[in-house]
Image (cartoon, rainbow, N blue to C red; front, side, top):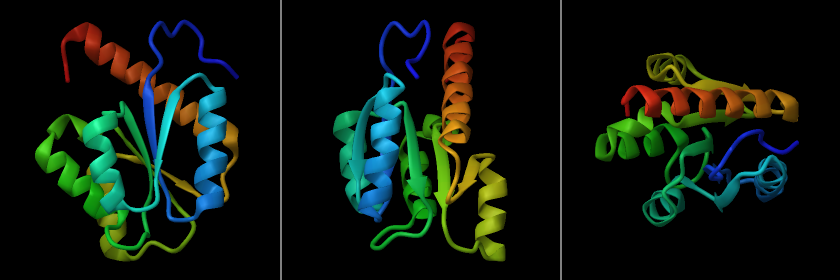
Amino acid sequence: MKKRGQSKAKKILIVDDEEDIARLVADFIREMGFEVASANDGWEALSIIESFKPDIVVSDIHMPKIDGDELYRRKVAATPSYSKRFIFMTGSGIDLEMSRFLRSTGCVVLTKPFEFQELADVIEKKVEEMQRDEITGKS
């Protein structure tokens, strides 16, 4: 499933403490034609974001050290344009506070196990939004 019409491959960071899931998701996204990096937790992700500069971050919500919501908050505080670059995934329940947070971000949340086609659709939509924003001058 190669990305159509993409002149420069977008970069995607996968953040998940479950190594098997991170590897499967990374392999699938790489097959779509994207450049991929992985992190095992939010703390590692913050470091990788600075050097890799991903266009999109696909992050688990519940992780050791720094959860996905804290990763989002820290990155968006430092670089507000990242507020539109996150896609969350979760395999466990979401409490009321987390539900409010996710609604406030407007980010897509995929519930594990999800279909790879669902992930592909979300990523393609995100890339299209980013391309539209680049054309119209939005960040």
